[in-house]
Amino acid sequence: MHCHRCIRFFVAAACFLVLASGARGDAMKDSTGAQKRAAREMNKRFADLQLRKIYVSDFVDARGERTLPTRFLAATFCELLSDHGKNERILSRGEAHNFLDKNGWSEKDLGNPDALSKFVSALSVDAILSGVLSLKQNLYTIDFTARDVAGKELFHDRFQDRIAPSILWVLVAERSGLDADIPLAGLDGVTQPKCARCPPPDYTQSARKDKLQGTILFSVIITADGKVDHIIVVEGLDPSVDHAAAETIKKWKLEPCHNAAGQIVPALTQIEVVFRMY
Image 1 (spheres, helix red, strand yellow):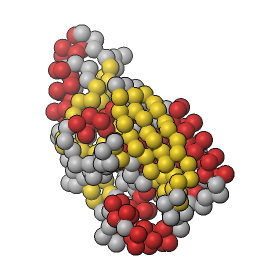
Image 2 (cartoon, rainbow, N blue to C red; image 1 turned 135 degrees about the horizontal axis):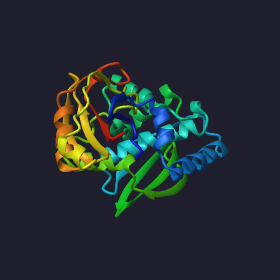
Image 3 (cartoon, rainbow, N blue to C red; image 1 turned 90 degrees about the vertical axis):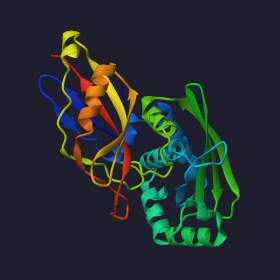
């Protein structure tokens, strides 16, 4: 299993914590080959159009609404585009959101010509990439549209890929009723949490007896005071082991996440617990 931007624990004869690495490294490692190919092809289009700076706006769903999955995929594709092209060509979404916050704006305000004019002037943007996400069975589709700052369409493209664990955890979190605007750890300028006190879950007696091995993937919120909240099992191993692991991570204490402006924020992330017997 690939764990995209997560805290990973191994429980065995010895246990240790592996914190997620930098956001760009995670995007490169855990994104699918199809996503990487799409990013390379799109960068070729940007180069052919001689675009200087592209902003990847929040994607929307078929209803035109921003959701956790649409924001997650916009942020992920932004990083892939930057990693597979010229970094200076793709505007950092963290930088963009910091600018919007300072002006008391959100992405929706970019529909206002005056706000958009100030945004593109201050950040030297000459094109905006948007996307519409649709889901069907085990696939997701994004219809991309690139427009110049005057609103003229530059190109349209469609991307389709399987729903892998690297996006499933966000879908599960959305279905639990979380606010669509909850920050995403490791994306859009938001830092990763760091463990201050994170004891490993116990290997239960029944699990040892049955020689149970495998992985539990949780979707969680790291609160502003460093606690683990809103724990959801995305992929379980066994109900008793899942429960024991969840009860343990509830007691963890972490250094909370910070946004691009340096402010402490609650953030959505993953915790992966791997049980191995040696």
